[in-house]
Structure formats: C-alpha cells, structure tokens
Image 1 (cartoon, one colour):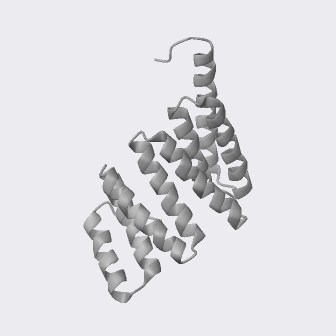
Image 2 (cartoon, helix red, strand yellow; image 1 turned 45 degrees about the vertical axis):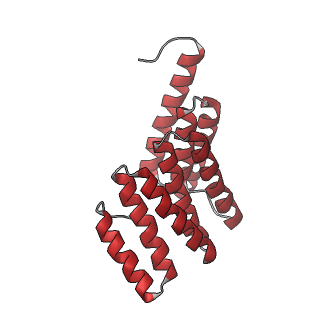
Length: 169
C-alpha cells in the first residue's frame, strides 16, 4: 500500500478511523503512519506504530495486513542494523504467508535476503533470492524479477570474492 511521506496526513486518518471505530482502517493508518516515520528515519516511532498495527491485524485475523506490517517492522529493524530481530520478524511474516497457503511476497523474501547479506550470511541470502525468483516467475512480475536476478548475481559475486580472499572495494 502507498503511504504519504508526511506523518500528519496518516495521523489525521488514524484519528478518523478511531472516531469511526473502524479497527481495520486504524491498522492501515498505523502501518502507513509507521511507514511515514520510517521514511523520515524515525525508526523507533515507526516500530511502535507497526507493533500497534500488528496487534490490531491479529485481533481482526487479517493475515495480509499482519504480513504487511511485519515486513515493514523487519525493514525498520534492518535500518537500525538489528539484523537478528529483522530476520525473526521476516520469518514470522513468511510463516504467516505459508499458513495462508499462498505465495510468500517476493519483496519480503528480497528483504530477508538483503538482511542475510548485511550479516555476511551469503549462502542464506542466495537461497532466499532464488526462492524469490521462483515466486516472481510464478507471478509474472518481470520488473521485480529482473531486479532480483541482478541482486542474486551481485550476491554470488560478493560471496565468491569474499571466499577467495579478495577485498571488495
């Protein structure tokens, strides 16, 4: 879902959702408000909003919303270089997608792959990117597929370069 970069926009929508008593709109507004804070590099504020949204999505048994908010939460942890927390959060979202019985969102897999890359866990990063490529081939998304193939090639190059003892500059 799209979000406006100005948190006040989503704060207004959050207040309206609360006034109407619409929990789903409240969770959406919280997630978008978190994304606005995320964009502004206010990661702790973003994390707080994502957690609130996750609780509401769980209350509503909205797996898609929960996966969305968990993916954003993982990204915020990644930005803070809290990689272990990011991996746990992304894995929770993947488990929910598997529970739902649909394809894991490729963007989620790519985020997890990038986190493993940041941790220097190249074998896991490569495996996750390969899984994302399979998902993208099934969905027919050529732009994302092209980008993910490029990332996979970069990962393999970095991994081979590091394995051979040559420094990456």
